[in-house]
Image (cartoon, helix red, strand yellow):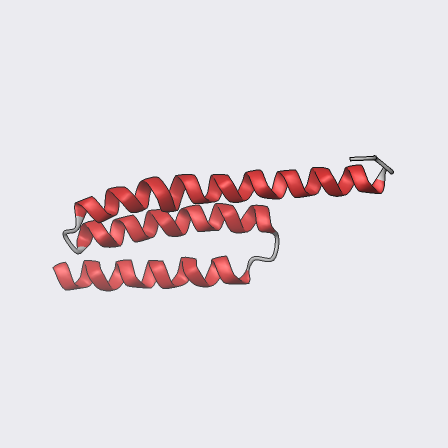
Length: 88
């Protein structure tokens, strides 16, 4: 039973990682990256590494996607401001 959980978790990780690579929009990539972090946390939990799972949950599913979303937002705002002829 434990082997089946590992195989299912590995399949989910591979599927979400592939989805993260195939998505072209950076904002959507951040959301898929968050789901990838969740699936990795599940995999680490199944592999009996709860400390690594908690770290992955905090960093991989929350902080990294948040930083990517904030960066994308700032770049898009700067692009709009440059298109409007702003000085900054």
